[in-house]
Amino acid sequence: MRQVKSILVVIEQQQFRQPALERALALYNMQMMRASQKRRDLRIIAVMPVFDNSWDLTQVLSIEQSSEMKKNLLQKYEKWLDAYLRIHAMGVPVERKVICSRSLGKDLTSIAKEEGCDILIKAADVHGLLDSVLFTPLDWQLLRHAPIPVFIAKDHMWSPTGTIAVAIDLSSPDDFSLRLTNMRLLREAQELSKYTGCSIHIINAIPPFVSPATLDMPGLALDSIADSVLKDGCKAVLSFAKRHKIPAENCHIREGQPDEVIPSLCKELNPTALFIGTSARKGLAVALVGNICERVVDELDCDVAVITPKSVIERIPTSNQTKTI
Image (tube, rainbow, N blue to C red; front, side, top):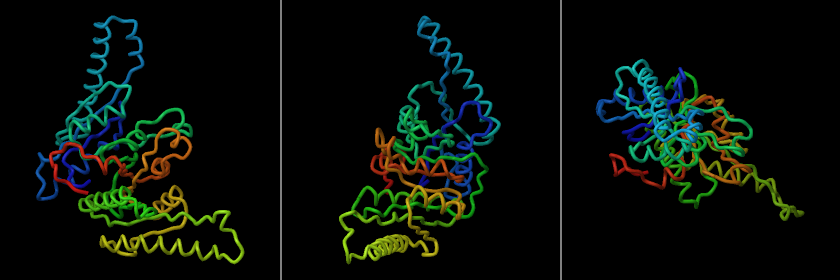
């Protein structure tokens, strides 16, 4: 959310409700309310990816017939998108693109780079149990590989009040990439809080200590080791919060696995949005282990802003080349 100059919005095909566009318009209006922000400074680019099964027939058609069929279908979708934007984005300048692609994740990422977008907003999809094994849904592709923060919008009216939750990971203090991700999560959440007036709350899951079989020896106090691990984890979270001027009462720490603790805490806090990082696993690791943020996104009712390692380390061309983490 920090210093947003350009927003890429993924439009779902011919859906009456477009949560992603609603969030982009809300961010636009909130930024316009700030005295220092000028209307022309913020771009919204609405991209509608389409694919029609009839295009599979183009293999038996001539090149001219195939091109004409695709052209007519794209014009049909463009007219629908133009009509939708005239009604639902009245008074807000929105650029529009309709793309035909079989590799939507790669093409959306390319557009984000070409247009110098600062954030990508997409509506949440409904996923099945075998999605990570048989195929990768579009929103999961973006969560794993997008070079910019990805905002997953849920299908509900957005009421930007209350709290913004930030899920930090302090399990590896020496991991430089992880430290950068935690910092980026907090900075993005703080910028959104400026627009909405929401308070920042930090949430953290401390995995329970599991004693290896080799430590199961007489006279060894495993309970004291577990208590020490929990206390150290709590101290690390409170120290992080203190450095960034987050009140201790806004820190929520619970023992357990992240994919269980985070949804539980979010149900209690009922935040406007959750900011979370992702390990961006891929291949067999995803099928066997999965990404925590993907499991969390499916369980939450609030919007979820995801920061990938690639979005922290890589730089994409933007109008503001001096941004820092």
